[in-house]
Length: 110
Image 1: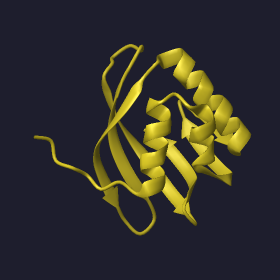
Image 2: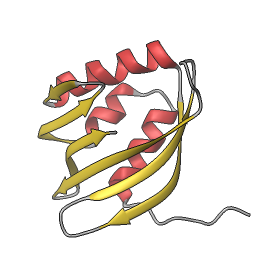
Image 3: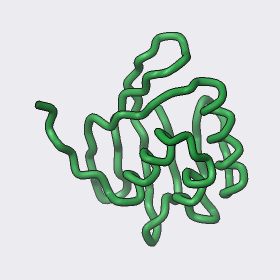
């Protein structure tokens, strides 16, 4: 049986929104000044993050399955398996989060 990992509430909400392909719910997880780094691009602000989310759902049709989480003083790193419509699927990616007052301030996907 896989081990249960404890994921901070806002990150769990983000994973749920991603798996439901709900770009508005994804964007709602982020601070107004948030920045996302993904695929060599930088998205700044909730509107840009919502647009990025919608385009990745359409392009890759993926699901996110968290497999590990590590918290330190400056960030939270969630490792997740992504399975979808893209070359090399499934892949394991690291999501580097910084949080601010219960929202995601930054996310870098590596």
